[in-house]
Image (cartoon, rainbow, N blue to C red; front, top):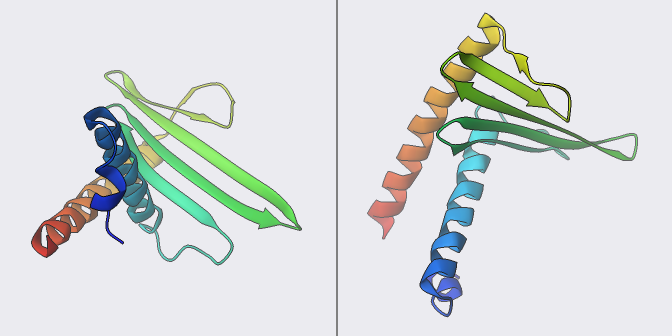
Length: 122
């Protein structure tokens, strides 16, 4: 079943919010696959939340216990800060900056290609 029947009964604002959530979820899945296949039993996302924020999230089961790590990158004029699982903000290293930049570039290309495929299929 397509997206349209699910969103038509909603108000315009509700439809817009639902579409944005579903697009973000699709983008996060694309981002989660940037660095190869997601291992079985893992859940991984990487996405651009807004113009200043990138998020990496991963979940897995270790010895029967659910584990999760969320890293948020906050892009500022003075540099990129990261916060991970409630720890204090810290400046990222030059290597981490290069990796984030490369990941963001690949992410944007793959998300754009996905949108083009969706438009052609519509």
